[in-house]
Image 1: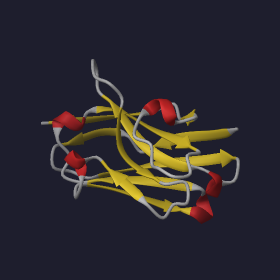
Image 2: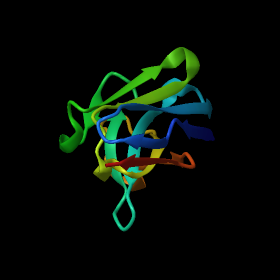
Image 3: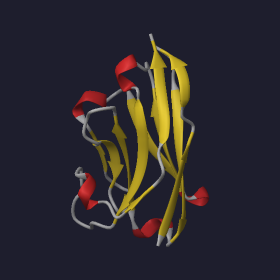
Length: 125
């Protein structure tokens, strides 16, 4: 079992930056990869960024390359999502999730085995 807890969401102005955190507990942190997803009202849950299980490879969705950065602190079992130049369309619930795939970084939510409860980000214009 893996427990994931997101934090860091809130209400920000357009153009500001924010960092989300995902604290993991349970199984060894290095035995799974972590991804960040978001889901806006009426839209599907989409993968924004994710680590491979080894932690050496990273995936970013094309639309957020250069604006969002995923990072990790293994000593704290925590993965971060740094978001810069936030836009109103970034408003969504942000989730972190864990996968155990070994050869690929999955982008589909169905490939992730464990999920956090989500944290709301609202970006005002």
